[in-house]
Amino acid sequence: MEISVFNGSNFLEVHTKSKHAVDPVLKITNRYKLHAILNDPRNLMNKYFNLTSDAYFQSQKNTKLMLPLLMGCILIHKL
Image (cartoon, rainbow, N blue to C red; front, side, top):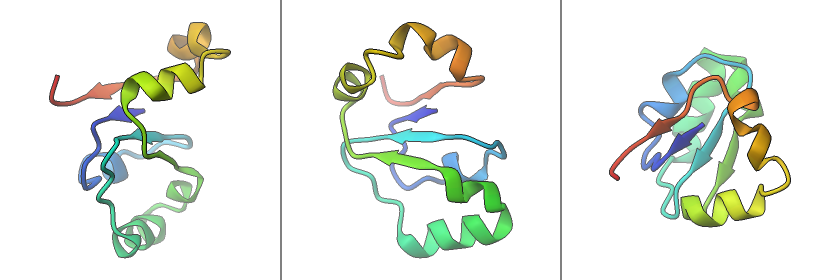
């Protein structure tokens, strides 16, 4: 999971089977997403949320308590 993803330069380079991108102003282009999928097909499973982190966690409140168990790494930028 990465909060404040912006253009995805860090997010898409992390190699793992499941990732969530959270940013109210996602600027990851479809071309960059396609390039990342071709480099690592696991990027096809990425989930993108055009939300603030507060709104994201509110929408995920049923799994919020499990978040540390579900996510192996959480990157937070610009706090």
